[in-house]
Length: 77
Image (cartoon, rainbow, N blue to C red):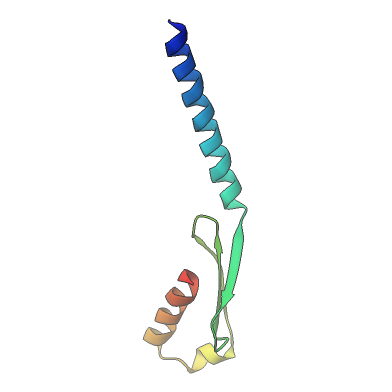
């Protein structure tokens, strides 16, 4: 194998390793947002996956469709 090919392979391996490390690190990041009316609090990880959901007392007064929409809106905030 030529030194150019070895260099390209080494570079690709390094980039793969960096991507794996970034992916693992992003899993450790979390953010929590609470809706203005305090009915919903949602927590997501660095990849945007929902990791926690809390419903406050105002949530019990919402129509199910409105509550579902508020959960999605809050998680995407």
